[in-house]
Amino acid sequence: MDADSLLLSLELASGSGQGLSPDRRASLLTSLMLVKRDYRYDRVLFWGRILGLVADYYIAQGLSEDQLAPRKTLYSLNCTEWSLLPPATEEMVAQSSVVKGRFMGDPSYEYEHAELQKVNEGEKVFEEEIVVQIKEETRLVSVIDQIDKAVAIIPRGALFKTPFGPTHVNRTFEGLSLSEAKKLSSYFHFREPVELKNKTLLEKADLDPSLDFMDSLEHDIPKGSWSIQMERGNALVVLRSLLWPGLTFYHAPRTKNYGYIYVGTGEKNMDLPFML
Image (cartoon, rainbow, N blue to C red):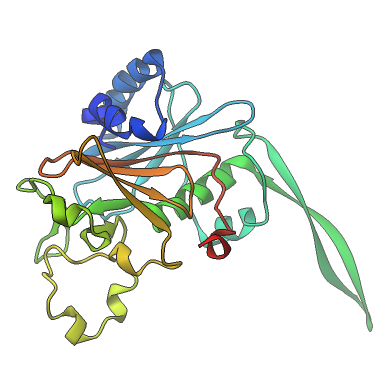
């Protein structure tokens, strides 16, 4: 959700019970404005909160003028002091995939994971147990990256792609109509396209290259991983992810108000295919 309209956005997303105390809201309002100024971001998004056993991580993301350029991620434990996180790498994701359970809430905390490695001594091969230490900060970077790639979404038309490549905010976007807002095909993944490149020319024939340049939600696997609900007498559409419980997207049809927030434990629902 955009930091410039934080209070309204939190109000619209509050139907899922994901709110913040008045002092946290006040701290976020001022600190995110300073983050935007100091780091010279074009836009700052309040990404959400990852719940820890000792403390919670408040997450924000900075966007450059090109909206699909890699986003810079920051975290805070008190909503006032922000620290920049390193970009996620494949090695980080592979390392932290073995860690299960809740976050602690301490970035310097180290998880221990035992691995069996084969050691050659002459002609004999032994299996040796090695303890690998994984920092919680590495796990935090990895989980945020996975959630972004899987469930960060925007409505169709909110961004447009110029013929020269960069993607910008569409200033003429006036919101989806009520009928469009109820369809999964009206929402896109907020990242570089993956599935779109595999489509045939015939499938791309009806697409507008300036608007339909990202992957649509309607082909997400497993099918049924999104729940769409109309709230406040059809004045608000809310999408909730069943794959990453805690991710809520909201959009008020025929207005520019949209955004998403994640408030959860940072754990993926691996049982979803068996629950549908």
